[in-house]
Image 1: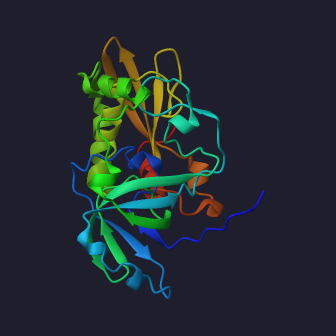
Image 2: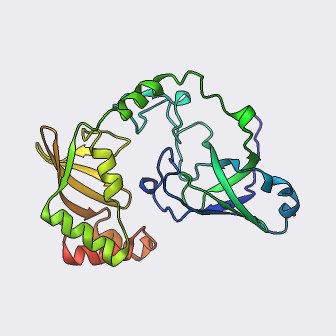
Image 3: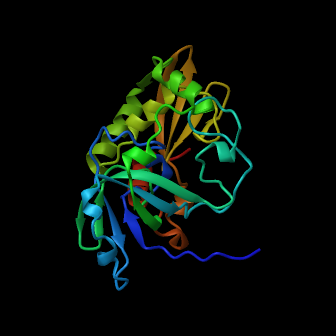
Length: 266
């Protein structure tokens, strides 16, 4: 089999260090600016000519943190049901290529200012193309199993989420001290379905205690009927990882060290 060689034309800067921070399908309801920095000394400034007249572009990119692929995956939205990978947008593909339409806000030299997207910071970009509404939009086409999931997501949430006094104190401390706030995303996931789910990183710890991964953090919660109670937040890395010089640069490492000084792990 022949080998194809691709070289990035640039890298995107989003500030999103972990997958939990990148919504699977951004809604663009909250304004967000991201920077696509094209590589120097390639004459890309000339290649950008005439692109400013478009309000949206396609990004062709690489899931650079994905190292394996699976024939069957469990999408993060909807029930924990396996789907063929080619019927999903999972990163676990034979060739982990991503395709995302994003708003084009401005072009400054060889830097593109883009709207909200679901890419992690440092994602390599292979190509960009103009989004043409007349050719690229087919809103009346069938969407397979996603139609049923969309209908489910449009229905009122089945669960109510509340924070215990401890979890409230921890969340407020993270916001005030480190400007870290994963509570909205946490609640968004739990109000829909708090049951164990591999892709949503929800697992049962004990008979009545569950854990959910929140990027570099985690939360513990209980479920009583339709009431979900977040009992505590915790660092996602153990103390031995955070103090290991070989693991320098862990996401939110400094914040987690200070968090654990206040609320040690059992």
